[in-house]
Length: 576
Image 1 (tube, helix red, strand yellow):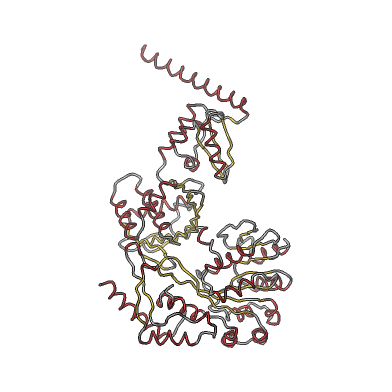
Image 2 (spheres, rainbow, N blue to C red):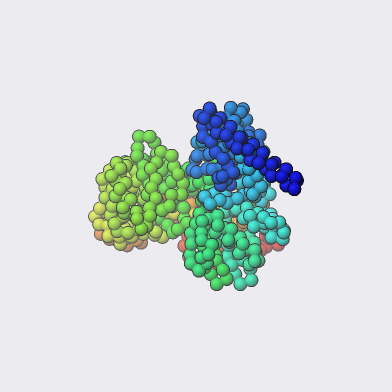
């Protein structure tokens, strides 16, 4: 009986001591002029914990317990502590607004225990995955090739650790970031689940998983991206963010039901991928010089055409980055906003509540100098954009057509008056993206047979300008994949064709001439079409002929001969 009485008395004393400790923290909060918090009564935001490593939090006698946007709620034992001040300074230098609260030592100990719940990367209800600089650097150092990613995934799959699903997600994400993949595909099939990365626009097999493991992985992905776990028979969309150092990489996830389970695609939106200056897009120097002048015109329309994924938005961002300056007002209307540019007003449409047409009309009331419209899709947007170009605004936008010349019939098809197109449109571009050969991962091959005939025909058709003459017409190059070369390619560059408005083009458009007639007239302007631009990039070793044939339409007989020719040579090179 006395033993139980002693235990009961000890509990009471502990309760009294803790109350006194909390009372003291509350009194000190008033003294220091900060708030008070009892962390034993609050949920601890694991996203906030990831901002400060456990060792540093304990050393500073502090812990972040909540984060929202760029605000951090920080519980401290003493605001005057030197290590605490250093931690606050560090967070403020990282761009956070720090809200300080007094907390007792017991309260802090309770919060520090939550660090045990964290894996290397942990998702929270806010949809943030934080990966520390050290961890992502370590993973990226390990995952330097497709083979190393595959080996690491096999190792995780075969392990029995309790956090292997979290670890598997980390490896897949880190591998995709290391190889600069734009998308991750998780695709259930009858026997296995296939994982593929889109590398430089081409899907590349990475690994296969058993269905039993992939279900847990898909559940984890749905959880971190904010999708509903109980819905498996309908399409869903979600998103989360990976924070690496000072950079935030958004991941947009899409789930659709399939025969053998849900298929997940994750689009990786790295802001660095859109920070490409105009001169690095792939424009020939002759074209670049003309475009530098065109983008400085105060009004008119610059249209960029091509299919989805051809780099149109990246080109428009490069133009905006070049022309933005404090004295001009630039507004963008996007779906969605993919990269935030300082000094520019960017708006995002909502297809139900805030359409392109509504956004464009609203933007014109904001007294802009330059407007970027993500895409011209319907007659109302087309007409409003043309009117804006005619009334003192520079308008940048995109159209889905196959060629630059095809933009004019497309505008007429969208009910734009042909009489005003010539006055409104300054430039129409078309572009495609080709993968760039890595210099150390390419094989030099002599040009022979029908492939050589094709290349020479294109060279003979080049405009008579010294800058267009290739340095050689004897060899081309093939990728040498495998190992650190992965696919043999790294990065992409655009091939362009451009039509500038002149009197002849305006007359053809006004009378509704065909795309072929407009294209024929544009050749007199002395600029390259996409095939010519691509062949020059092939001859200087930037890309391969098969890569050009993948994105640009060429003679079918030549394409067939090219495919057979390159397959044979690749097999021969690999066997050696």
